[in-house]
Length: 325
Image (cartoon, rainbow, N blue to C red):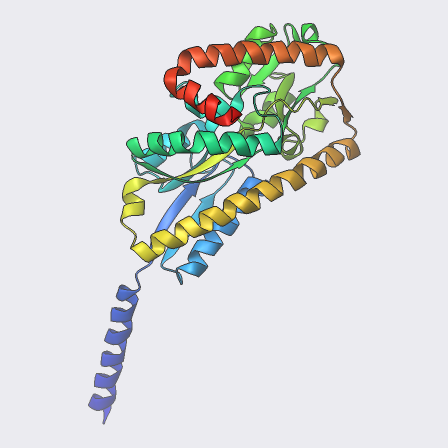
């Protein structure tokens, strides 16, 4: 009888192992540069949960937030090279690579959520094709809240920014510094608090959400709600990793991505309102820009759009025409 029981047990174990192999789990690492409590990161976590649920555990995505896996500037290359299967990248930071990536970082081109959605409709087909050529799959994109200016001292015009140490995180933010005669300093989101604490940065143009994440109210006193643009974070996947999935799993990923884009937009709008309230609650003055500052910044935007169109060529002209329809 013992042998019979042992044979049955061995047979049962073999069956379990075979079933386990048949349902082998694929694991992806997804790199992100933002804090775990940022709304983009929370959206990524929900996306990962939705994918795992929809695939009955066949695909598990682990989100690595706060630049814990790769720095912001390294993420796209890491996904291209297969060091991470997926990643989240702010599109505007890639403008030097290809001008179309930076369209949503042009000041005052699209300065509201409705305009941001229109720009996304015009920009996305071009970005999808470019990414495909680079061995990547575009999953979804979500806009940050409108960008404002954080400063130590009050500003009434662009002239008040002359000589100020200005945090730059993209070609567009660096160019703004050049045009207003500020000193551009390249600092990514995960390093911003330290840069402010050590005096490396004195002003920055970013969203209220980043202002809260980085506790800018501990170092800066003024936030000017200029609503300059709404840059987007896009989530991308290595093409080989995506193609290795069966069709049903691929469909589950794309369905979850579409839901993440819709959910992320709603979260961005909510966070925009909540962030300004949190900045005020922590002693920061949240102000409307003066008429002169608005005028000065509009001129900066016009200059940058002209420069961008010269560099982006036919693709840029096509994108702008489609956006303005």
